[in-house]
Image (cartoon, rainbow over all chains, first blue to last red; front, side):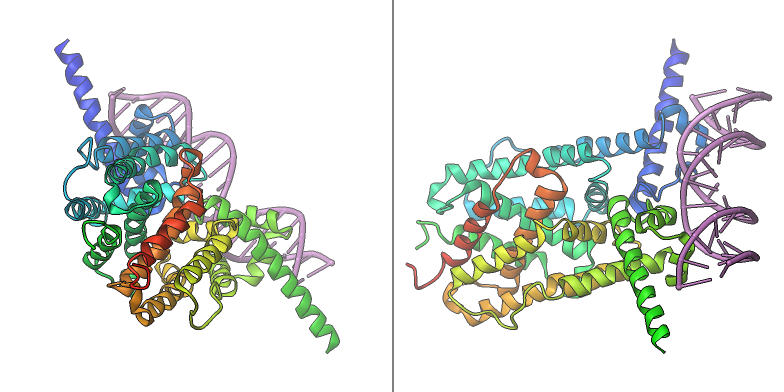
Length: 205
Length: 205
DNA sequence: GTCTATAAAGAGATAGAC
DNA sequence: GTCTATCTCTTTATAGAC
């Protein structure tokens, strides 16, 4: 019994090593550009070991993306409901996103590969959308609805604009290499974004 | 002499056929997922004909992307300088972008492949950024600077927010299949976006 | 479960006829 | 310039020893 458990643990450790290696290669070379040989080398196991844990290349890829999407980025925003002063809350929301996303190569690569493989694996893109994107938008949308003094006319559209600005900032600056051509500090973006959101407030004028 | 011209024309027609076929396959399967055999079949020519026009797979891909980026989307916004009433101008700008982008599968695929191959071909991403994205942002930024009555505090950041909201809308709704999960009409987004941009105007309150 | 070795198919690129 | 046929290397996936 003890032996069986020990075996199982060793096996799980191998599985983790495989997933780690797979992540490196899939994120660098994309799905089609990744060979199982390179994954085996990167993971430090033989190719057959991979096939004993995953049925084929597609299963490995799906398992990797699902694990990353669900386990790591499910709780991007922890609280169940947002509260606090609008400008402070929005700033904290934006900075949480930028910290956990723009400065995290793993998240950036995940976003990139989700977009790249969205035709080949549409279910993966939908899972990502529901797990990573939708939650933040719903939370913010509820907040806008609960704070009519901000003068937001369409809470859903406004929350899309809020996060969309951040997402596109990250995509353009970090993935499309925009920051090497025309740098724009994230601080300036956040300041401007918050000003646009709160400047219609009836408490301000 | 006439024969020579005739030959040249035929050759150019073949080249166009190859680029058309290459576009279909590269956009569907990505760079690594595309085989020269499939391009040949899709284009209706032999593989060797491709190699007589393009040195290798990489050259073909680069030529295709550069042609599409420069020839088709250089003049996304025609005017040299923006003018008109803010809300009308912003609406026209947003609708031009959404019409030429969100409802154009070719543009969507180009954006997707630029993101997907941004590591392998960073120069391509930069060309895309400079040709397609930067121009619109600069035009709008100048307009905001010329219209201080709008109360925009940071023209560059605001123009990033404006176009970034549209880009991310397209990416999320069309590429990540967001519209199949939670549809959001582009009209609502544009209305909200324009309201945010003009509601600080000193002419309004 | 894990390894080495290999089978079978597909890839990029070229040779040679016309 | 264009085609058919082919070469060589890499790919996914499996067989068989331990």
